Length: 563
Image (cartoon, rainbow, N blue to C red; front, side, top):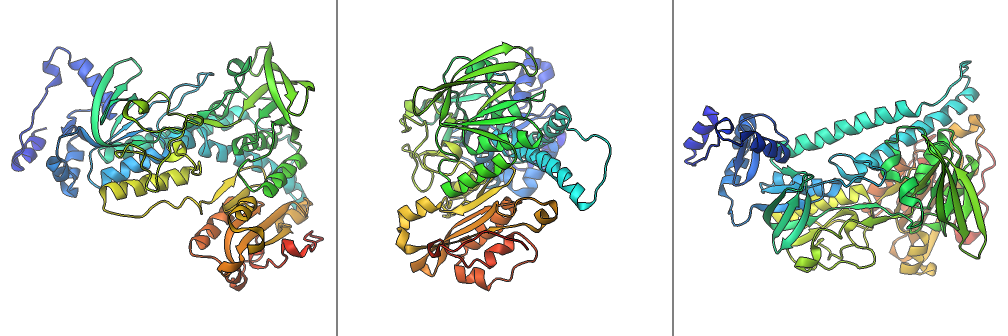
């Protein structure tokens, strides 16, 4: 502590010192400080209301120049930036702003699901989304690899079975390490992290309420809303009492058994694919179309590939009641469903019902109406301009709460980072929301970038497009004797823009890895001629895009008959 005093003295800065062991309520002050800073040691040093850290962090901040920037700040507001929401987009924006020398606070709290599932810092992706989903997807792929391995000469006599508890424990341990890393990164960048709900009470001022109901008020020059979304429920008898969502699945302490997945979103099909790949009986109940908003030809091919793996689809039905017949882990549930095209009713028995019918934006209880931020009344999403600015000039939004933008983690991360650079770094780059690649991690992955075929026709008109496509047979599938006409590749080209590729679609193994590379090429203006001029890597699935010849308009056969 003496060294820190000497440092501030050498800089000509007065400092106030509170000796916790010499005040009556020192223990409670220490508890509050620990909650705000995630630091349990002393000294705990604040500069202009920004937590810098202990002795080592303070000297590091001095060496990097951050300490001098904090000392020079105008204290008209407590912070330069307050981010409400500690998910991917919010953390990206907060950390980038802190790197640029700004005083930053992140408010984040997780409201437990109806099944009482909760988690730590990092948002949906890390805790109940992308990360656990991909790891469970890998677990399912390993099961398929075991089946294929016998055709490649592997012999094993012992019974091979999957242990759900082992898998979920390993996945949750990994997630725990990631959330600890996020907290550490905030400390290192002197970002204040408060585990509280944020609510606007007036312009530039919010109320933070922690789990004990204690209220603290903070002010900031600018705010970013990054509160994300949570799974939607059906609003029928028994849904919140007996059903789970993706918030619950990845940490479920028991194997879910025979499962009904309600919905046709990416999350619905991904969860259904994982459970089927682990050997469980899976039914998917679909109200209308698969993967709404995606290329519908590709969506139907995804569905067909899942049916080949034994997933049962109930099309044009919606649940109207869920009843619990037996308690247990899992128990037994009866689902009553009605046709969307008439009065037909059906019943089914399942161990688990997983709802994946969409997500609702978390914007209703944060006081946006008190300061005049416009919100779409139907969706809860926030309309913004091309620089993520809301109807209130000092309030911005990134991530899934933004109206009309892709609900993707990397999009939120990029948008948050670029926003901070524009606000505090003098930069002008904006997020590209059109060429955002994504993948649906169904057992056979679907990757895409750019326009769906339907959207391309709407924007460019059919006569101005050329669509090249083919079915393909991965070499790895030949010996394993898997179907030769399941995997599919398609590109959509703009005829009057030098055949520029405006839509890229692939259904096949490792589609995410394939799509990422081609997405970079599309950012650089990829054309059909450039694809033709590219030498493929043989034998790979991705090389099929360098040899596309058949157009949809030609009507020629694209089925594969062998190597």
